[in-house]
Length: 394
Image (tube, rainbow, N blue to C red):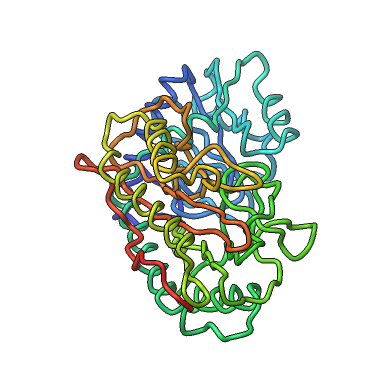
């Protein structure tokens, strides 16, 4: 079967992905799927073009490509607008689906409504759910991409202390880290799932700014430098006694890893060290707990229990503003499924990839904690972000 934008040796990889999508279609009683979002075209082709992919339950998918993309294969068709799709499907006998999946969560409402009009009399389902379900478990190819991300992200983190200068602001230090990331090959863009998720190349939180709530559903806030992007570094000068939390971009190849490490300006206080040590205790226990068949919510509940045992509950996952999760899926996007929260009853599966980020916010000191991206394996969680986990000094 031909897939646009692919080298021949990758076609087996994308056959596996197509099989996963079709399994999810069956579970969601969907006979055909029409996708047009950037992330899902990337997942199904290995690259991005403007257009759509029509995936029937059986037979070859049909790739509709809008210029400047050019159709070259037997199952690729150039179109100028989506209204051409029904006639082209009919020519190939693919116009009989009674229930069609459209990406309700990834396309604008107006585009979804426009696509619905192409199929009068058909029923519709949420194709975004189908694609998220298919992308939950990663192939070996995807895991290799993410392992590469973790290595390159770790290489950047190992150089952070070398670009710190006394008297810097948090924005200046973040800018230096962004420069290191781009030099290492980072694409410079965070793809984040969710309609209200905006961030630049990541987040650096220092001192009291970490306790400033943000309207975005991230684990940590920060005021930002302008009300138009109220998250992250705010321009504060880095001073002794502050904790500096770095949670920066790990996207180098279309996939991402998510990693947080912390430094202090000068010697950490006993309270800061305790909070960081508790974060590490949580991570190490969850690394053993996180096996296939374990309920996702159990990871969250155990983390909350450990924070309570250490008498740090008031600061766990926020102080002025708390969030009710300690992790999320990672892949083509950040904040993919599964969300690691107490009420999530879904079960971990082998080769799911999740980021766990048990963090604490101490007033006046800042945010403390560690975050790693993991692969679920039969014997526990395998860490893809292996840079030194100790609390270090700048």
